[in-house]
Amino acid sequence: MQLGLMVAIQEDVTWEAWLRVVVLAEQLGFESVWTSDHLWTVFPGLTRETLAMWPALTAAALLTSRVRIGQLVSPTTYRHPVELAQNAVALDHLSEGRYILGIGAGWQDREHEAFGFRLPPPGERVERLREALQVIRALWQGAPVHHSGTFFALDGAVLRPTPRRPEGIPILVGGGGERRTLRIVAEFADEWNPGFVDPESYRRKNALLEEYCRELGRDPETIKRTLMVTYVIGRTQEELRERVRRVIRWRGGDERSVAPDEALGELRRRWWLVGTPEEIVEQIQRWARLGIERIMLHVFDPLDEDGLELLARDVLPAVTT
Image 1 (cartoon, one colour):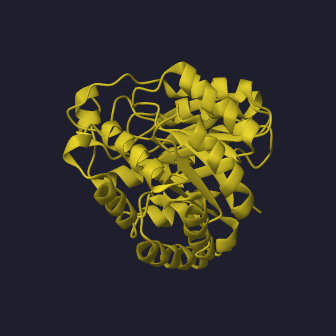
Image 2 (cartoon, helix red, strand yellow; image 1 turned 135 degrees about the horizontal axis):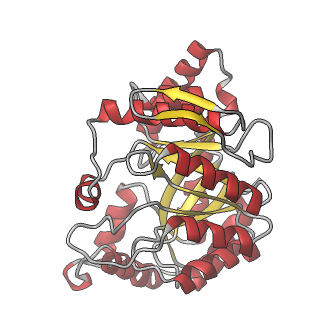
């Protein structure tokens, strides 16, 4: 198991806080650091400041020398494959090969409507993702690309420089759609992140992914299974109560209207990582037994350095391989 950190940079995260988490990820021994890719908050009714993804990842590449970096995930509904391909190569070179391109079909209807992007029906979205991946891989070859597809058209486009490695940049596909998305994972992905799942739904989706891989003649073990999970950690019950109060505020709620112990119970039912370091180790090991190879720990409060240090000291050594 590997542990990374993920920060939702659309939720009032300052540049100072983001850069501090990046540096801490490197110093504390985490395997990777990730951003989200949204144009505004995912919580309806809130107005929050948002950091731009490409500068955030560029800063992470330049500030670190060991951790992997990437996004969870860029939607092909408002990120053109040429933009994704070119920025991915730049980050591949700036990070000396530590960048992973996270890509998905898109989902947030409010965001698309507000910023003037069409959000197609699910089936069309997934086919757009498939074609975008074809274009990206073709551009990474460095030769002229002639592509006339349903969604994208290129006429002799050449993208230089090319990725550092002949096989290109690792691609992480996000999503768990069982009829279409998992087929794309089997066809294109080096890594898979299914989104928000419980263990039972993960088992079902993973079995389908293995079936699609067999149909394509691909070894399912060549795809790394990953999972993003939000955590609430505390040495004591009172520490847990204080941190869950912060979660309630972060989600735009009134902490006075929710009993902390009830909120903690609800988060456990949603399969968040919740508890003491020992309890969180046990919860991570449960996912490891299902085949998850990396967990991206969603840092809802990037200013909580004590929580990050607690994870690094008491959880990281117990679960990492």
